[in-house]
Image (cartoon, rainbow, N blue to C red; front, side):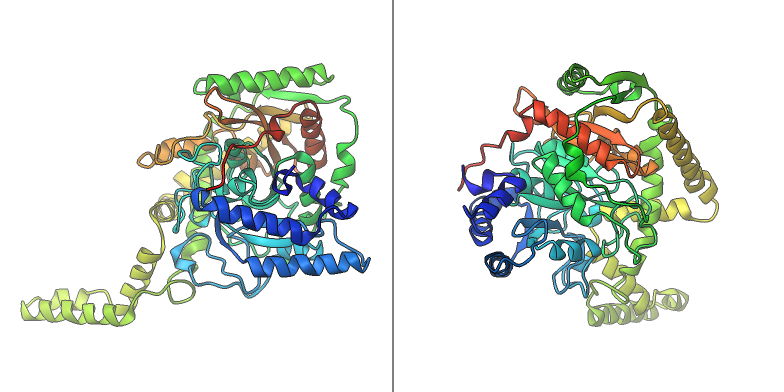
Length: 515
């Protein structure tokens, strides 16, 4: 089998047995990128020379029998929202198109410490705002299973990179489902850790109380391998929790005993695609055949999840993105042109005798702020900044933001109550399979509803994983979601691994020919 079709664990085995080197593997993925990424658009950038130099350094260490990290020689693609020293970190936004990070995010330091090969930077919805990776400021990404469809978002580039065999592993971020939904659309495994499990230091913030970095891979085993490297307390991130990190790989090998799964009643209501419901219920029957007990539970406030999320997240985004104004950070509009425009406007008003209007003109500095943000941000980011600014403004804070926080607390309590009855929740990831590119371009509400089954995990801070559980008649992947309490990622991975040990959905590969 070609190197690009092997899992990360299998590639490690190839290197450990001497059947392949890191340079062989890295070169194979670089060649694959050259062959197919022009049609997929998963990567914003890659540096073949740098990747091969990293691979050669790992090979030298291996030949010298020096100690190696757990990811030694494995190429990894990283969402372009995570800072890496000297690298462009654009967040897929024109306002940061020239920004080079002056430091490494904690997860990048841990990848380097584990001897991973940093292969390239993946595309995303601008500042992670979107569910289709169509909102990138540079290019859309296409679903490797059907190039006319979206790979999901906002980690669509990271998901498509794995699905198209451009990298065996990738890092994504999940603010409202941005790892799990694209993983489901692309037929791979994606894990959102519980809030505080993985450091957010060096992650460009979208919504600080919701964002989490997580692994994306073909298999649960590979996701566990990557999570084991990036998880753990970080004193530089005040939201990072000092909890011991279990041996995730060891957890996978335990038998499935005494597991009680909670079937969320609200996740099987009207609007769920019939083929997805059928595949998920079949997965539930498989768990029962393995000895798991399944009982129906309720998340009664989940119906308010999307509304609460789309108040909390934009409010935090409007604050986090205020710094990108062309003066403090980011793209700056043409100052000379703005000054000339101001002088022309003023002269015209004075000539017309409108002296008061001339005095009320926005000064060039104000115009510079406004124009820089207008030119730098895309439509979806502007929409969310305006929504968040409005909800936080005087007179509306109590009616919108504060009420959303109260709903968030109720959702958190729903999860606490559910986990008293079961260990994990089971259900669909999305209401539909991958949507057509442009399908919801003029309907942001329909796009937001793609997050229906995923946003509540972020509001509650719990962990979730998406694993492949079938295909539609049209050949589109279907995802199964398991959710567990924060810091119970080992239990989540263990249950997901038991499913993959009995199925082969995760072994399917898209027929994406070179060309």
